[in-house]
Length: 145
Image (tube, rainbow, N blue to C red; front, side, top):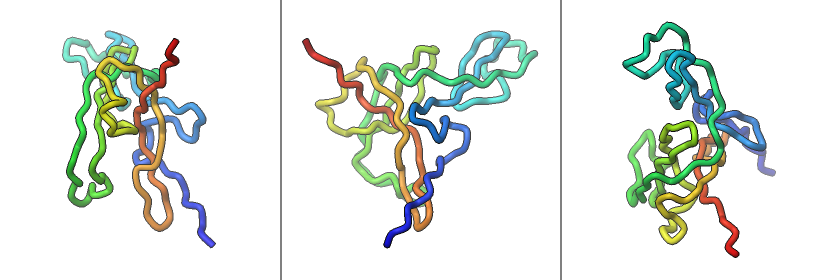
């Protein structure tokens, strides 16, 4: 009999969890409006006067694929859970920032620069006790008329 593994975010505070509709957790500076991911307690805008601490915000769950690459090699320890092939995408969110993350497919027929993608949380790897979760972006299937 197999024991169900405990689902654990790979890093606390990257995304809302547990959640049926996960969102990335970012921050926005109340002084200059700069948005960043992951969240920070310091504004990253060098032109800001940094007089107030950034506020935590939930980022949009959908964005636009800005760029991507397919990795065709395995990474070495301690990151050897990244097994080739896997895709990394740069996703532009409506908040005006670009977030880099894994994509759910390596099928280049399904990946197009400028396409809509949606946030998804899934398993990156597991060990004997835990399934470690991270965020991915998956293509949004558009209904063709």
